[in-house]
Image (cartoon, rainbow, N blue to C red):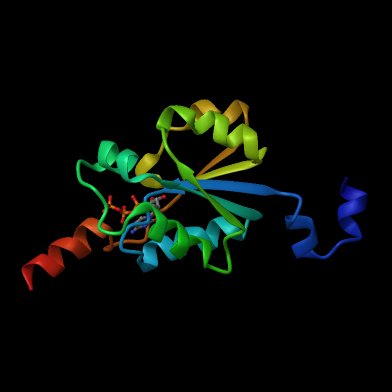
Length: 144
Ligand code: CTP
């Protein structure tokens, strides 16, 4: 494999590597963009966008933007290869295996929570972008 990779450019080498990440990505902001760009720098990125109901389960409120709009926004990014709807946290292992992901990327707010998948793929937690979140943006807008 090394000798084959030695003949290829960096982007061609990365095309062998499949990266998967998950999130709600509501009220899309630069923290979302940063983690998606950093994940995509590791390989071909596919994103599981949490359904409205799953987001409610995780966060205790429904997203501002519905799941179709959130999927369209994430899918339109040049760093994203594809999107799918994440409907259950229990299916995470199935999503990872179905895509045959080599790397699972999550923000470090999830640190340690997905270590059980390290038998299936490499698990990488990236630091969150400081001082921004969807919750914070909603609070700021409400206060204006
Ligand atoms: N994320 C990040 N930096 C931020 C905010 C989010 O890296 N400042 C990452 C999260 O760690 C996650 C992905 O973006 O991997 C999607 O996060 P999501 O929960 O949709 O965004 P938040 O802004 O954290 O949403 P909320 O405030 O509703 O929890």
